[in-house]
Amino acid sequence: MTDATSTGARPAIGLIRSSLLRADATVLLRSGRTLLLNIAVPILYLVITNLHLGHKGRGFTYGSTGFTIGLALTVGLMSSSLMGYATTITHDRDAGVFQRLRVTPAPTWAIMASRLLVQIAADLIMTVVVVIVGGIIHRTTFGAGDYLLLVCVSIAGGAMFLAIAQAVVGLVRSAAVVDAIGRMFYIVFLLTGLLGSSGILGSTAQEVAGWSPVGAVTNLYSGVLDLAQWSWTDSYGLIAVIGYTVIGAVVGIRWFRWDSR
Amino acid sequence: MSSTTGIDGAAARVLEVDGLIVRYGTRTAVDGVTFQVRRGEVFGLLGPNGAGKTSTLSAVEGLLKPQGGRVVVDGIDVERNPTAARARLGVQLQASSFQSELTIEEIVRLYAGLYGQRVTKQDIADRIRDVGLGDELGKRFKSLSGGQQQRLSLLIAVIHQPVLLLLDEPTSGLDPQSRRQLWDRIETLRADGGSIVLTTHSMEEAQAVCDRVAIIDHGALLVVDTPAGLIARHRDDPRVLTVARGAVTLEDVFIGLTGSDIRD
Ligand SMILES: Nc1ncnc2c1ncn2[C@@H]1O[C@H](COP(=O)(O)OP(=O)(O)OP(=O)(O)O)[C@@H](O)[C@H]1O
Ligand SMILES: [Mg+2]
Image 1 (tube, rainbow over the protein chains, first blue to last red):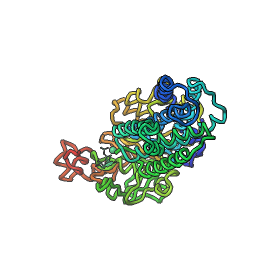
Image 2 (image 1 turned 90 degrees about the vertical axis):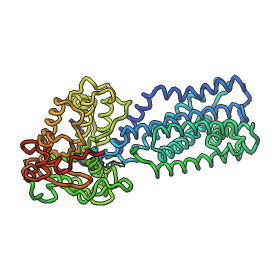
Image 3 (image 1 turned 30 degrees about the vertical axis):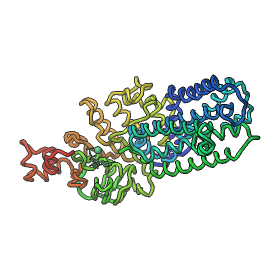
Image 4 (image 1 turned 120 degrees about the vertical axis):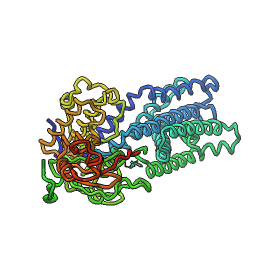
């Protein structure tokens, strides 16, 4: 019936990995509404900002195409990698989905890695769609090099928000509390990014905001769109993103619990 | 029914639990439990709510790291080599679920892969049809009835022909027909050489399917014997006689040994 490995042998990791990826990708695609929302929200943001701010060139200034698209992409990353991921993980933990997976021979890192990879893939799809739409709305065209760089930033930024989410679900067990914290982070991150980076609150606030998760990623996005203008702010952004990712990952892995009891 | 005395050598044992201790914080859930399960045996773990049955199984499954003792599955130390041990185990958890967005066909495909089975679409359909879920292939797990969910969990538990099958309250919530069907499945699995550990609150079930049973309470193992042996041994126990109504049953022995108080 099957060419199964003999009973009790350690199954091949390749088969385990592909089985997990296939299932996780299916789950993500099935949650169509979430997926759509993750793309619709940044696009909505692009449309609104276009009405207000119009077209002011590519560089890093508030309201410029680079900044606007960068912030839109960051909002998209937050929706899926911070909120979406944290919600799914707590839900599956509460339901006992993880416990069932863990009693199989699949290594626990493979169970998690598969989910992370699928999330990152979703972030990349979001990136490409948002950049295309953003280019149309803001009447700018992006070259292959631009896309490549933006995709790289999305990987880094997506990983950072995933790491932050992982830290939250590691430290908090209750699904309701995780949900509340996720929303709070979303709003606080967005406000610091939006208000701080705008310079409305002064240059100190702007500098501080550049170190916040949203500020850092947004700066990176706009930085790679205008490499000639790459500044210290952008380098700080890179350092901040790496820092948040490492801290989030360490906390999230060290304190993660597979069951909610 | 197999004899209660003398376990012949390591090869005859498919599971050895030795001095197992499981704590949650300061609370000791399993307190030095020791028992062995023979190859080809159906072994029942009985005990009131909170006795430590699920915790014992969790240690065998490697879901938690025990604070003391040793668990050996088919000659493999669970703590030292959890992956190899898990590959030999088939598991149906007391409380577990599958990703709610997946159809049962996709769930079976996922778990087949996790246990190293390369299966075709046809294989999967055949297996699902075998357990009477042929019409539900495209349904989600949540939309199945309780009995259908149990059948799917059992199908997944045996998908890789495990050396040892662990079933935590497999018949809770089942109607009499489904329960009998599950007993038949257990008989078939045993006839095919499988070994099974199950927990249950039904003494009738323990008597019907188990070769031997262990009664545990407050994390400690009280007795291990065949159901008939237990009755014979405790027929004249005053604790048992006070609760017996007529001929002593396994339930009388159970209540006699574990007390009549309700556990929280
Ligand atoms: N994850 C956990 N965290 C803290 N305490 C736990 C946890 N799991 C179980 N316990 C406690 O350990 C004890 C044993 O629980 P266990 O689930 O092993 O009992 P059980 O025999 O399976 O009971 P039941 O028949 O109700 O399923 C109980 O007092 C329970 O409250
Ligand atoms: Mg239990």
